[in-house]
Amino acid sequence: MTQPPLRVAIYARFSTDKQRDASIEDQVDSCRELAAREGWEVVATYHDRATSGASMFRPGIEALQRDAKAGRFEIVLAEAMDRLSRKLADIAKFHERMDHQGIEIHTLTEGKVDAMLIGMKGTMNQILLRDIGIKTHRGQKGRVRAGKLAGGNAYGYDVLPGISVNGKLEHGDRAVNRIEAEVVRRIFEDYAQGISAGKIAEALNLEKIPGPRGGFWGTSTILGNRERGTGILNNELYVGRLVWNRLHYSKDPDTGKRNSRQNSEDRVTSVAVPHLRIIDDALWDQVKARQRAMKTKNSDVPIWDRRRPKFLFSGLMTCGCCGGGFSKVSKGGFGCSTARKKGAAACTNMAVIKQKDLEGRVLSALEHHLMDEEAVRIFCEEYAAERNRLQATRAAGQAELKRELKQVSTDHKKLVDAIIAGVPAEQVKDRMIELDARRKDLERQLSTSPAPEPDHPRAECARQLGLGRWPLEKAAQPKHFRLRSSR
Image 1 (cartoon, helix red, strand yellow):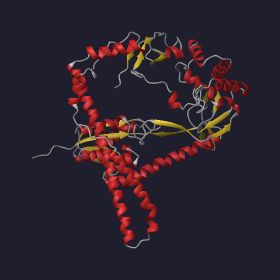
Image 2 (tube, rainbow, N blue to C red; image 1 turned 90 degrees about the horizontal axis):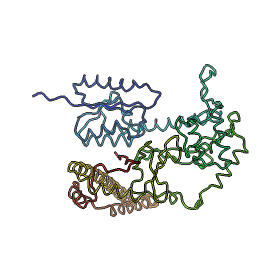
Image 3 (spheres, one colour; image 1 turned 135 degrees about the vertical axis):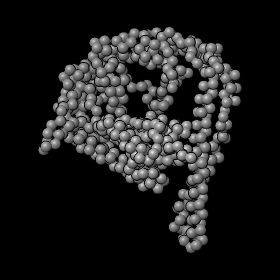
Image 4 (cartoon, rainbow, N blue to C red; image 1 turned 180 degrees about the horizontal axis):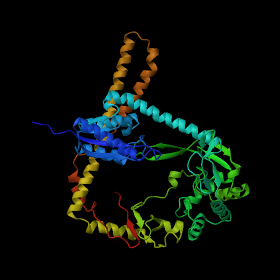
């Protein structure tokens, strides 16, 4: 009896905007040719355009993993391992997931991918990724020291076309944009005279002066962050100083989100570029003096304690007129943020909805109008899937802790055996102390782990729905705002 052909999913990715968009099609075509030679059936293709291989938080690779769980294919095919990921930990985890589903990974470059190949190639790719980062950073630093552009351009300047130096095109020079420079001077002068950033933004928007990205001006565009040097009022380039490397960026391994942190002063590079000056030192000092005077009264309170509290529908509402955010605008009311921060040119909706009325209307609609049978079924399925996902994540974490505890115990026993065999205790004392401490820490983590939850919590879901705590469907919404879908 003839066996059906193996089903194949093709994955392709290119890294930057500088690479050809056709690179995706080239990779897919090459993979299709191999699949045809092997007698495999291509059932799906996935791709990510202009995305880094340093993160697995990519729409294409995430869709591939979802379909792998659904059993849509038996083989994943890519041009090379680094198309899947350049990080050793990510490619190893991806291989583990596919192996668990009984799915093989093949590439045009390496052939069938196994654990040994991942160890070698994954390490090489990770070293390459780090090496690229170091060399890029070094190159940017050299450009900054030469007074050239090392990143995105700032408002008030034009990027000049490259010039030929010794037969090579040199890029990165800037010149003052006279029209935008006048806007910069106006912002500084108005702020120094006591006009608020909100009023400045509103006036610029009414005059139809486009903001730095071509849209409306906002208070945050003008004020920015003093410590981080962001915002029009904090850009030292306007006084002829090019400051670089004030921040460094890293990706949260759990969420894939890019976070920024301030660098220490010794890592910051500052270069004089007098030809790029737009305002004089006296005006700059006036603005800095006003900023100091406007500093938050509770400046001695940690920033986390000064954040505005979150409310029941925080982040879920949008303005029904402009689509902007709806946020707390008074002690007990919500209103359109865009209308208040960017003025009537951006939005004219100045309506305020009392928090008590808003929450009462939505919760009442949830409780009395949304017990649709199909909606309840969908909710229960989504809830069960999320609970199962969280439980699986917890279980995987516990399994990893147990594996490490076993390894620590084994290493400790080996050291004891070595002492019995005649190795001086002084040579292994520090390592034994380290292992003891780690063993206690692992045992503590395992002992405090929560008890496992049921894999299929539909009974709990139904119980909560019966209590009227989790009803679904669309709510009756106030006239001037709408709830934003979380999906």
